[in-house]
Image 1 (cartoon, rainbow, N blue to C red):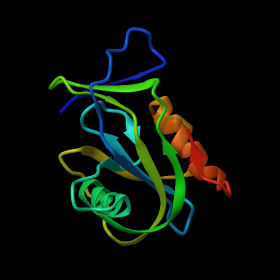
Image 2: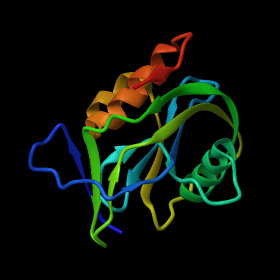
Image 3: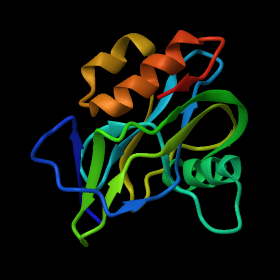
Length: 156
């Protein structure tokens, strides 16, 4: 379902839902970052999605990365919790979410990069090439924080 991201935008519609989302900052042994080109908005992003009933946030991240990229991961830490109410995501079905996302740090343990219904491209990207990708500012914050290897997770 196509979506529109609004950040600190006075014209953004009012949210009508809050859903737990997950993302994974996955780096391989060479330091490359796993990125997808999203099918719904054509922006590059870390793989991720919504947590389902009956699963933990970590399990949701593992499932979403596998579904969107074909890569199997193991969680190694927490990049941060992103809950800025200025970030609103409007879907074409009328749902308007306030952001709430847990971003995990992970490493690959198997699989082959493969696209899905949610990803039109899957790529391992060198850190110095990330700025060349079209990325939403909220996703750029997660990537920046993941690359920083900060000792404490982001809480914002």
